[in-house]
Image 1 (cartoon, rainbow, N blue to C red):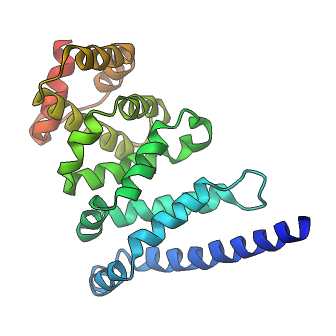
Image 2: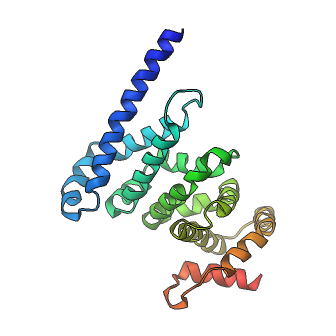
Length: 231
């Protein structure tokens, strides 16, 4: 019924606006180390990560026909997640949230990247930050070829975002290090090689266009650079 739909939309708008104000407030104080140090643990205990992932899934599942500033609210949530994931204790909490990992991975794997392309930068940054504290997650995602393919497809979407590009290559480096340390059967190896060969021109061009400080390379970065140079 149109009336019920109108009431529902009004309730959703009120809910999103309420959380938008909270996010704006937290984003304002998040750079103040003393304040955030006092607030972050209580907020985590109150389920901050679950609340944010709930907002994210709500925005992703929203119908395009709904009269909401979907792009603005989704961008707000992802940017806030990006800020939170840079905080060690929050990132650590995120590593154990299977629901969050699944949603982020599915965003990268989504075949319809037209809508989420503008959000890919935030997503890869959040994933990269999570993997810094969640190394136990790397074996699982390294076997997820659709995720790896989606990750490579994000590369053209972040050509001018140095932070996002570094985050993307950091994820790839961790995956390659894991693959190198794992004995793959011939079928898995063929699929892995086929995926990379299909995107190889794009990968090599991007790496060659970057100015790399050899002394600042992490072991994973050095492995990735060496792997590319030998191909």
